[in-house]
Structures are given as structure tokens and as C-alpha cells.
Length: 324
Ligand code: GLV
Image (cartoon, rainbow, N blue to C red; front, side):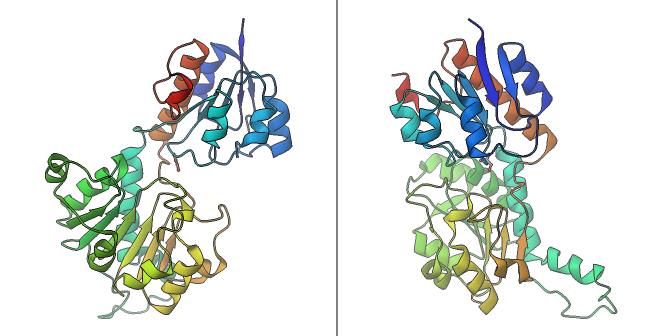
């Protein structure tokens, strides 16, 4: 029997071709997400769904998709999918880890450099015709070379950022509820510390944890209160890991120096105060956005999908218990 797949939104063509070779594909070849009702209607009767982090996949959608065997997310994060609900219904969920590690770490480091050296603000200053004369304290920022970098979450991406930090002669501290082995710590040159110590000691803090109930508002008013007034916070994980209103207040009052943000609590909305603050360097969720990486992510999502349709174990399964 020919398998049927819904692709919820535009993806790179190589991945579409891979899927078309193996299944009957209903493709929403658009940069706009399908409205919830249309997604529900079009997923009905399909064996597979290729979706993106802008698609909310919850119990009611899964209930309207009888026969659905796999949800293949084109992202490493999968907080847009109710995995427990999928597991209960015997539906496999897959993601795209690994291929985006270095591209994401590059952007995190770009935000460390950009927020620390006030690049967004400097460019706006210049474009506004305000650069009349060099002066000694013009747009002075905070050194990255030799500073202390605090990493929350030392998984694949956190480790890749640590390697970049080493290249900048940084002292590397990390906090993760799952401590890495001594070998990994030594190889990376990182030192384990409590959440509070990382907050107190770091000049730059970068977040690399998945969004879970435990990490929701991991950085809130209290945590911001422990940071140095010269500290810079960078978030390329998920918006709700940071209490955005508290962060906006901390940036406005000078409680911390600056922030570099790729993700937002209520994406695509950004807290209105952040939009007005010169010390917030903000970009629209582009951490994995290189052509090569986004192409690989799409192909990986197609490969995960095809494996399940062929009755095989997909390379990147989020809920293996469905198969056990
Ligand atoms: C992007 O945010 C991803 O999770 O891949």
C-alpha cells in the first residue's frame, strides 16, 4: 500500500523529493503555517506528518489523525509536540539532532560577541548618522577574551559553545542537572558549579537546555538578581526558559548589562519593552539558519519519516518506548 504524508509547511526540495519517491505527499508549499483547523483536516488519513516548531501538535490534532504513525519534526527541539499524547496513541515522534549543533553554537557565540560589544546598537548609531567623531568612551562594551562564560546545559550545543569559548581564552563554568563525566569536563576544560555560582561568577551566560516544565523560567527575577551588573545573557534555547518581562526590566534598569536573544517567550511576539532597549540584541530564531544546516535538517526529517514508513526504527526517535 502507498503511504501518505503531509508536509505542513515549505521545506528544502531535496527532502520533498526524497519523500515523493516513497509516498503520496500532500505538500503545503508555503512559508505560512496551516491554520489549526486546516492542519487537522489535511492530516486526517495520513500515515506521516512532517511538521515544524510553528505547528502545535496536541491531543486533539492527534485524535483527528487516525492511522497516523509518525510525526517528524524539522527541529531538534520538540516542545511544540505533546510527546506524551503521541506516545499514548502509539505515534512515533522524531527530531533532527546533531546536524545543527555547530551552526547553533556559532550563532550563540555571535550573540555573545554582538551583545558584549554592542554591535546592534553600534550599527543603529552609525546608520542614524550619529557618528560625528571618534571618542574614548564611544559604545564601550565588555571583553569576551579571558572572561568567564557560564553555560546552562552541557549537551551537544552547550559543549560546542564551550569549544568556541576556549578559543577565546574564556574560563568555562557550567551547570546542568546531569553532570558530565570527568573525562568530558577535562576534554572541554569546563568546571561544574551550582546554578547560583554560575549566575554569580559568569560575565556571559548562555542557555542550552531543552524547554521542559523544569526549565520554564529557569532565568527569572531572582536569577537575574544574582548576576553581575556587567553580565550578558544569551538565549538560543527556547524563549520560555527566560522570564521575558523580568529580563526586560533587568535590562532597562541596568541590573544586567545586555542580552542577546534568538528566541522569545511568545514567539513571534517579542516583549514590547525589549524592542525599545538598546542593550537587547534580538534576532528572529535563526540559530540553525545556514542553508547547509537547514537542508540537512529537512533531509534528516525525511529520512526519519521514511524509516518509519518502511517499518524500520528511525535514526532519531524521541519516544522509543512506542517501539519497545
Ligand atoms: C530550532 O529551534 C530547533 O529546535 O531545531
